[in-house]
Image (tube, rainbow, N blue to C red; front, top):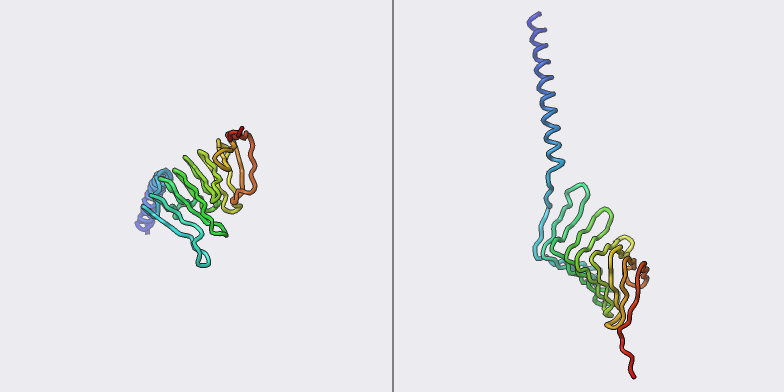
Length: 186
């Protein structure tokens, strides 16, 4: 009986030591994992995607590279080499959005466009900025950075900070000024 208790004690002691040792190693592995870079679940190169609704093309997205991070905690899609988005309104008018870089956050439905962002409407209205955010849920664009908006080749508005709806009907400029370069005829 004495041998059995001694064997049991030694077994428990060794088990406890190995458990503490494993726990320490597990924490080390967790620390490494938390700091480790994550990788995309999918990569698309030279991609072209279409959004079709009721048999009609509503949007065409073209990008040199798309990285899909749909397996991470905060899911997102990244376009590190930029996007060229063509979308069509209800009258089938063509409008475009171009940017050097874009990232779409899935949970918040927010798109961050950066670098030479240009929105051009079918009637040649244009908005240019270094960075522009688009809230898909609210169909609303905004920037706190510099922008230039033009309605034609002769009239434009410049400033810092602007908000506008997806149809460019409601525009809220903050610090801006308008300028016209139209020459008066004699």
